[in-house]
Length: 113
Length: 114
Image 1: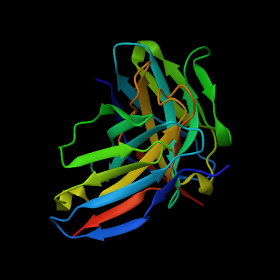
Image 2: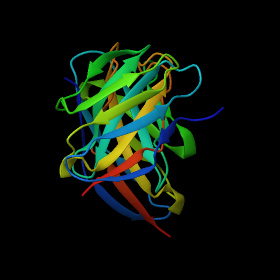
Image 3: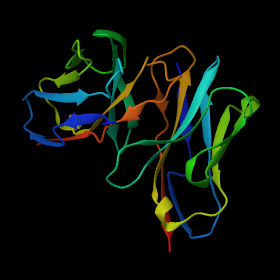
């Protein structure tokens, strides 16, 4: 079964600081990887995804993530955060050909102006 | 285009009652997945429907059930509600349900069991 681990559930940082959120997954086969964001009171939105090809993936709002197959990791980064990045971030994995998405427990990120 | 619509947005029920939640997917999408979101457990997969057939089910008791209609709208039902069923229930719609194409989430139904 596929599973996802996210650490440091609560992250507080100041505007302009850099953000990195760790994500490790457990699955023996080919995976599709995702980062979703949930802004306060809003629905889950896709930030970026990785299916194949270049392991460095760029998403919306200046976010990027790097897939490191040997480490079973898909860490999310943003060089300089803004107050509007305050949200909960979820890493998710789908075993290729599978029709369920396994989510991590999320990172609550608070950016202080 | 219209997004994924979940109704109702908020619901308060008493222990022992049953509840039905509805999800209308994006037009043309045939797959609907349901997730339960709680602060302690995060997002957990409930089930997925495609063309009126349940293709996959998560590790939830039989009190949780669902169905999908010919127009792809889906309902989930929880019988004999327990306090621990209080959660945000999310549905996601996609073309095929294999996550190779983008899935879109609704805003969820917030269920409170008292």
